[in-house]
Image 1 (cartoon, rainbow, N blue to C red):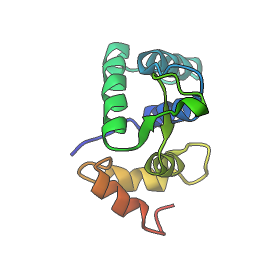
Image 2: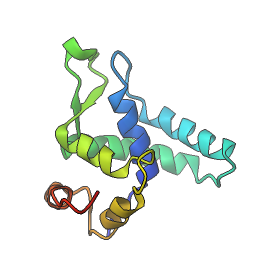
Image 3: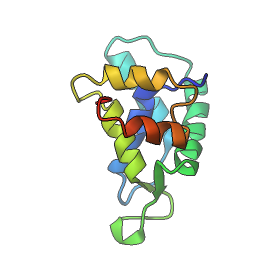
Image 4: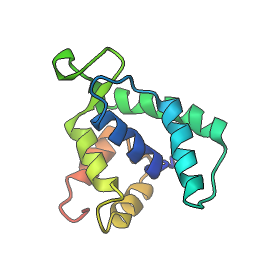
Length: 130
């Protein structure tokens, strides 16, 4: 069973969403993510491990169609992305600013690989997930 760091994936998707004109830097976001957790008094994990995962998540999100290269007309610079419909759907399910996001995250965690495209698309199409 594959487990994901939903808080960090949420951070990456927000960076994609707001990344017009800026390069996508997942390793830097890993540092910022851990610094923000530490500032809030939360336990931080192994930063080197999270930096490694950051690159893996970028590749996974791109290959599985959650993000795609940002068009030049939308602020694309060849090093940044936009959310696809699938990526927007994922963000809406795991967004911590939305009350009740624990239920969708729990359902995602119960899957063998929640970010497998067929698994995610089937799960996201359920009206009761949100």
